[in-house]
Image (tube, rainbow, N blue to C red):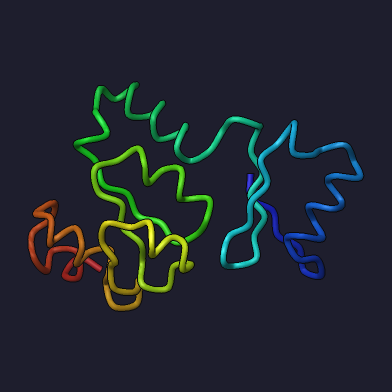
Length: 128
């Protein structure tokens, strides 16, 4: 679950949840670069989600690529063949990435997919 508030930042939201008895033993709390607090059950992350989804699809991590920009994306990076950080990602994410894509505004996602031969050059920009 992702939570944001018009007046409270992620640390303040986490404090409210802690006062309600939702803490580190019950939930994993992390915040994204955009000020959103991500809340997941303890032991669950984007990494465990990717692993489970790939297993259901019959795909191995060595056949996958993922994109991320925030700390909550880091567990996913170790589960795939190629970890891609977008240009405006947090420094920790940039450091952990295999590839850094251009920004979304500069078609970084599409250009990276083109680079890896996943889509035809220009196809994503022509359809938008």
